[in-house]
Length: 365
Ligand SMILES: Cc1ncc(COP(=O)(O)O)c(C=O)c1O
Image (cartoon, rainbow, N blue to C red; front, side):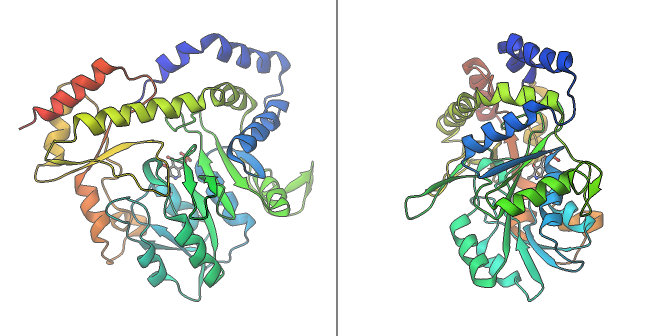
């Protein structure tokens, strides 16, 4: 699905030098490069502050800790997402309230969000799934009306841009009160290990986020609030700095791959291809098709036999997972769990590979 080795080899000397510099300096925890990377990413995204942390899951948890939600508070999230989005809500003793997703964009269904709001609702966590932003304009207006916080899960959409109807453009992760992202190696901007970050443009909330991520302290050994140990390693920051320099070209490369699929699978009747929307760019963290009239799992096996990897994000909707089980019905998410298939997409794909994948798909009977 990804070729991180080939990507590394293209910038090997820069990466090796960056790592070596950290090894020589020895400032492995909270080194100077962490701050530098944070300010470069803040500049790139237009966020007031970037607070790095150990992974994207922690980023979501730190956001909810800093907002001081209380046990039993309800947080609305899409049921078709990675488990981390729900997990942190449950870990903090809050109530995850699942809603279905839109069948075209795969992102949270605004009408369902509206219906799920109760006096106990404190926040909505839209997930910019597969690299496409959720309908933030509608969500932000709902949040204003009901005085709710929006925490964006931008783990899959770093680099995506939302276009508001008044002409303002904003980066994924920077529109809610807090945004969270992940630098998991296969993400749009991937580290060589775990990593994550928070986006926040409120100065005092940003200070609080930084404290929560570092044992509740501003000053060493002065713990003012309950925190966690969640810091980005300096080595990862050094790697991410190098990769941030290539980030626009990575996104461009993903778009080229997506355009190839769009063109060469356009008349493949048993596939519904990803649909664009006017309000968001798509960074294609995943190129996810929906199968129709064929057995998705048979197609997956057929492609695997031809050496073509595919993935199912996600095969079991969260309300059917043991810790989050409920009798509620989410027909779109349930259908998607049976029909979605993500095709290989990454920065190193060449035309031969793409042509082989598309012709193999088109030969499927
Ligand atoms: C939608 C979503 N949210 C949260 C996460 C969690 O990120 P991490 O793996 O860095 O903890 C991921 C990453 O897999 C994700 O895809």
